[in-house]
Image 1: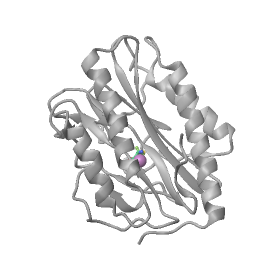
Image 2: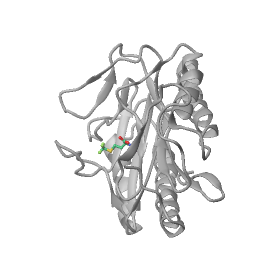
Image 3: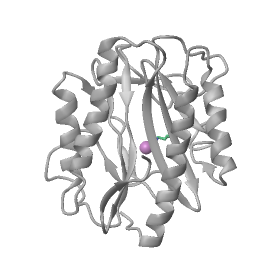
Length: 250
Ligand code: MF3
Ligand code: CO
């Protein structure tokens, strides 16, 4: 069932989203060669807890996710586990995915950052993944359907020959970080749930430079590309307000 938010609840979604945006801003400043993904995780934890929030990913799922952020490097698509032994080096890319709960509501966003000098093709992948998100966002209109969003994301990414990850999707969000509906990054226009005022959901293209196939590592969390090529991710929490669609996490 898709829940619709009241205007008071939308204000709380905005506050949670703002906290997530702050975390991404601070983590981005710390991304450089020599830093560990665990150090980035600590920065995020301190900001969220310091603001009276809760890191929604911490202890989520089974096995429980052991950190605040997902830190996914190079061919890691999503759900990379921060580690004291993962040291970023020049030329890496890192996706930081943050979910925070504040006053009972969640914000969720992801960005892929460059570490030092990154090759041109990979930089283009990151840029076009962000563009794919915005193609999807343009379709977030009351009366449209989720499939319109999915299709727009897919068309943009595939126009460059990229692989659009299929086994993971965007999702509804609110009191929980994962709610109905699913928001796939591929699909057909005119299909799926109709977009209504009060809906909140995450659009989050996960785009591979190679094929869309992915694999799960033995840690039972980290998802990597099957062909070892890099992957980028861009996500915001979107709320359909009376004044139109907004991104709470930007
Ligand atoms: N933004 C990620 C998602 O929507 C957050 C995952 S947190 C984790 O899947 F705990 F599941 F890792
Ligand atoms: Co998400």
